[in-house]
Length: 376
Ligand SMILES: [Zn+2]
Image (cartoon, rainbow, N blue to C red; front, side, top):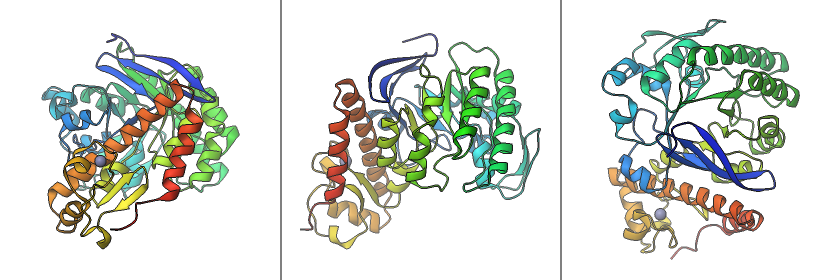
């Protein structure tokens, strides 16, 4: 275990890399998937079970935690790790993206964003300085810069103004974060789908210097082809020797394509959220357990999966508990989905280490092309 924050790359294949982000609270094997623990919980999962799926790090949401139960309260109760019983690394977002996406009444200025809570309508002010303060109060190991991004498509002028504002906020975030050994601050590249603006954003961030770099403003409605087009150049504009984090991505095939393009870290609500709506993410693709075809099916969701949902229960049982809205349906499918995501990341890491990434990716797409097993 390291006393400082660091990143070591152990193998590469093409633009893909595998390695370890080291922190005082434990190592994060990359490429890494971070389950989302929005409100100090990965919904429907005990923390020890999230760990059992292979997760090295969780993501927490500043916006949700500052509103309820409040950052000062969590700090007074010993910090987010103790509060939610997760002793490994935690990354928190800055709150910026969710203020923009979840609140209607907001006012954006050079200073920051004034908004009303979607919970009780109370007024709040989020600035780079306050975001850094909140993330420190929470005890976050990887802190994200406060930024702003327009929904795509947006015109160049809007994208440029937004990117420039985010770069000024990145400098204010860096200044407010200060010197905190063992903790990391990540800058966030913006610039929409414009290569020159992505490049300008990367240069601005590199001159400030961060412990890691995120690619922000993607997976906001542009589609996979446009996202991959951007990822063909964006990661290469960022420092090679620091972790690269693609925020809010994604579906399994998004992740595989992004890893091939040099991304090291991911987060997405998809495995947990879709697990609560009866969807299983599998090697054969997404499977809807609500479908009547599973009603009499004694077979597991995925015969090759070692998670509890697949080793102890049938598709018929999963169908039944999903249809009758039993809580265990959410628990089992969330567990399976997080397990599948972590297996996928482990497979990618192993494939890069052994120089087998191309074959791994070919197998990944071939299995999904075949799709689910035939009905009974
Ligand atoms: Zn499973």
